[in-house]
Length: 309
Image 1 (cartoon, rainbow, N blue to C red):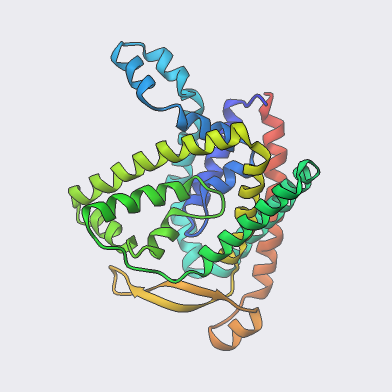
Image 2: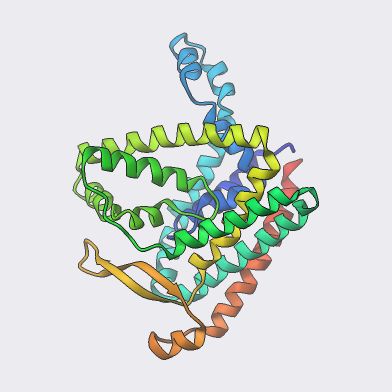
């Protein structure tokens, strides 16, 4: 499928918007909009061969080798969303979190069902099993209680490696896994206080993690595409337990602002939420859910319209 520059840019905007919401992965949008395999292949192509081309002054060849135009256009879209939508999404998270979560729930559910519908006829019993395993893993991650990794050089490096891998998996966000590992505050504090050693180790972990993991994913997609995609679709559908709007806090930590941040929650009914937490915002949440579902149809329509422009 040939993609136009505008089509890639719009996908980048959608990915950037998703990455701004804790618990939502840009990889989810990449999978929904049909660029996941190309994104993984482009990232996986960055390595020693690319460095060799650069050292020999072959900049054009290196750019083409990593699908540079695609990555640059996608990154521009992501940056546009982060710069332009950060304040809006932050305000929504502060004042209307439940409808926002409901919107993403509708988007993910409609996307997952649509992707399964388009592929299930190609699946064997093994691929259905992998689909169910993917759901189970995402649900397990969503219900897991946070642990505290040791704040050592290796611990920070490992946290970066794991978090960046999550960011390119649909359904699981890197910030969510940092919370589960007890490293979220360490990283945030390092950014605020400009702790260069910590940031350098974390960035190194991210770099190593994404290069190795993207190669693994590319290999899996090349030798067992349907099995890999079935597992990824399972991750996507299972992530609904994380996105479910009505959650009660089981455990929390004190963040850098002196406020409690939930690190383990459990999904409950809107009625239970209304009795024990606060206004479930049912009407707005229902509207958000419907809006998320409609957004999937619009994304697919826009993508098709511009793919051959």
